[in-house]
Length: 327
Image (cartoon, rainbow, N blue to C red):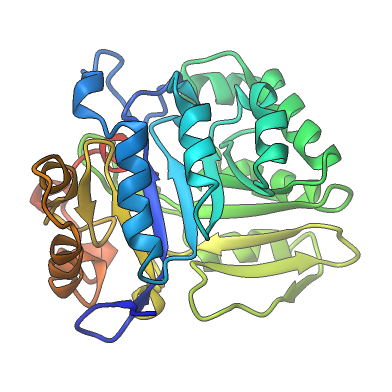
């Protein structure tokens, strides 16, 4: 089977599909403007289109598909999309804010979805509400416990921001002592309109130092394509990790491709170039050349936009907001 390879000989077998740019949260690092205009439904990829596009990718060795948003579970046809994608020879998983997860437990079990990533940036109700503009932490936590009890592989995504939630790092790590959770601390990344400042970035070494002051830490093995550097504390049943996009980029092993909700392909989270997959499909043309062109133009590192985050000026970056890209 042919593979999708870029000009640096990186093999790409992981597709992230954004289903919508709509969300029921308003996290400041993702969608800061409460009045942001979402795409009309007709401009979104439709279920049959998502299936046909994904099928092309799986025909070329893509073996993992992650559904993202916005919040993927707010789409009224989410179940239909999962039903279709589950027919493909790829692992299906998703990233969600968790508030609606209880409604889809049976669907996921029926369709063989075994892993979910849940974004939760604070365990403190007041901080959680300040970050998300929603008072639903208890519902999210109930769903986390539900999915753990039902045997799912549950990862918690925590975007760490200095002065906002960095005091909770150890609290999140301590969850892994008794719960088989996999906490991933994400360094704060710059996107259009997300109030990013380099001084608010908390790096992996800084977080590790805080944890090591209170816990005994062991390093775990990382795989070639891993974005996270994994650890665990002594006698824990879960793990924790760091997604070091800013301080220690992992571009050399990148195997990821992205589709925005309006069907544009991006070869990097930070890339400014976009390639129109959906438009090509709607003209009844072959999308494979567009996919290959997108990968051909993939930069070696950070979308070709910056090298050192300490020298980044957000106003110099050309990109969409995080919610318009897909998590």
